[in-house]
Image (cartoon, rainbow, N blue to C red; front, side, top):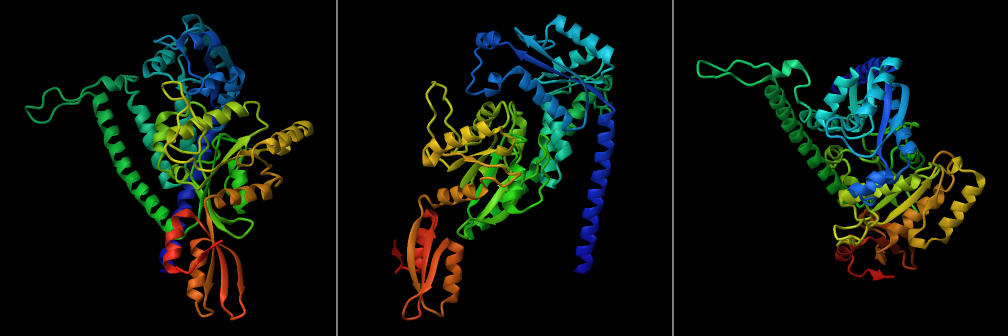
Length: 488
């Protein structure tokens, strides 16, 4: 048995060493690649003309310079050498190249002058647009989706994360098999005398991709079932789930480490965290909860990534309390918050802020909202007068909507945040006074697994009196075992 454990540890270490070696190679390649980041954004007039909906696409309301800097940050997240950046303000989108002819020629001159090997276009390009730009600029071109997929591929550490990234990447590449390379036009011979001309290379590649996609989807179904079993086991041992969500680089992992005393990788990078992490923590009065850290959201998050990571985000959908972590020191904090709310709504999370329906009216969920606390993080980066102003704004909000101003780095406001979480979990609960015989140790231990024991003492006869706070879904279970329990 010990030999098996040692063998598994050595295998895991070998995998980690291999991954590190590959990371070093990728980093060296990236450092040697001169990249240009282009932000082709529709002008406000053009957005109005085509009917852009700012509620469903909050990124469109963000300042162009801020959007470009975010794209530069994405490039830095995979260690590319950004040799230049620029904004192209568009009046219309061109089907062939996304940009106008003049802008394509202008960028071509910059590429030649700067010896650029890679152009990152901060927009979703169609396969044809990507191919035409590569021909015009004579260098590799990737769009926003491709860049985010590259980052996710670099960050994935668990088997599940790697599978999800590969699935999204294959679905992305499948749509890009449009004879980008000459070998895709070749034909393979048929089988036997009646085989005919056979399939083209592009058809063979597409078939192989589809077969791999099907296998990954089967593997992920196993992951979903496993997660479901884990969730069922948590339901039997009633630990509420508190999920951290937020825009990428809002400080979720730093806050997770502060709350859980963990050492999850946390760095000032976009998408520093990809694989989900969970830890058990205790609230001020001793209640145990499961705290989960999740992948950060971002504006215009590719739909295929939302779909691929839906299994990972199931803990958010099923959470008892959601902590929406915001970087209040960021200039675009309001737009980032709107992006997160839109994605949460798409995931079906009931705690998300209301979004407009097709008829223009606010969409009202059928179920009661999941308790959500806005965590205004990075208070340590705020000027003193802004810090005091935000503190006053938070204090003037209604108790149930009051945000928590914190610094995950220094620990400011953490105690108050934990108290807020405890208060949210207490909503809808019922307190019962339960009397147990001194010999009923098993019953007392059972109470600790079913709710929060607020108080425990002995009466004059030596019996144990326990005040138990019970969540709604466990009231019947407690009353079935202790029918004499008195509601308080």
